[in-house]
Image (cartoon, rainbow, N blue to C red; front, side, top):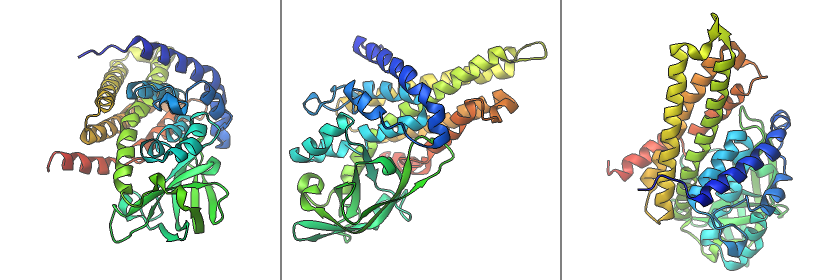
Length: 380
């Protein structure tokens, strides 16, 4: 086994790190305070090939592998978890189903402009009464001539307030739990489609999150993903499996930011006549942070490597998501403790990292759901 990054990976990491530090970092504080996403980043990143990095060249992407995508996400999340979140949806949940299952016309109409950052994507699955139980969604789509009429609602949808189109999960056959779900591409401005409140969050504040409502929303039949009804739950599982691997990189990037801030503070902050980093209790905290980050990164890359080779890795993807998101909670807590009272003040970024991290055991499958998936894959 070769644990070295390729030369291409190293060059890509340096390029995305420079971009994140130069173009994104100066925008973070204002985005945090106003809870608004700097949408001009979409076309800027699209022009540089920094959106949808695993998508093939024929649709405008650079055709990178999953390991490169993990590098990309880690570097973005190291600068801002909230801003990174919008790009994750753009290159994953909101567009990946189109790449995998869409018709060529759908790919040209939605995928190509999304890769270039000219259209912003969202993914509409979660509902007020259906979160962890994704098959329990109530949104319905009924065929009516050459249209489908969609009724239902979605909530906690990343990019909802700024999206140009949404990948929407709805039942076309409610008698077939899970398998009767179909996916539709619904454009902003479609009659009967309404964006609701923008939701205010504890963390990841630049990531604009909101509600979606469908009231007799008439969608042309050609907006049915792939032109075929049903099988949506299997398509969702495929999409979520890929996203859970990337989630490991998301956790690793934020953990890296916490470690860098904590180790710098431990050298600068003096108590009892010496830097607090010289006290064993703090040295051990920092040592454990570094150890866990190394494990998180290595495990994420391994499962990304499996994914690149077409291996079935549902169990490993859930393990990555579970381990990395839970390890991040300990790293964030230790970072806050090391900063002491200053960590609770808004002027230090550690409080932002702490708030951002708390979300990661909840979204894209809670830790409890990941336990269930892993147990099922083990035959338990």
